[in-house]
Image (cartoon, rainbow, N blue to C red; front, side, top):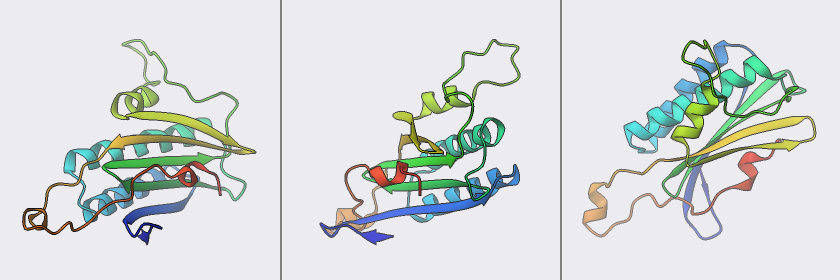
Length: 166
């Protein structure tokens, strides 16, 4: 958590995980726990967890690890949105939503992301590729709001740094 220049509170996390299938469960659990702690609606938490799972699974299936041998997953909750990103060492092809047939066993991950996210995209920075998505994630109205106190006020505006490879 950090205080922005205008005094508002924003919350974010960055985790480096092993380039291994077990990292999907770790990322899902950590994101779910943090979004719940931050007070995000349960349905928005579920959507964000599904999107991170799809992005991370795609990275593990199609891309190389970062030069460190890991994969980076990051998220930020701000202004009623959750921004998620997965950074890897890039792949031979550009990430894009597929159009699988009914009998296809795969190819639905980015289609799911496209459906759930307000917007998503790909950023390249040298050897690092980051696939990001922005999802609606409202904070439930709390009791403090009704008595004139504003409680948690998230940062407004997107963070370009979330999508930058580090």
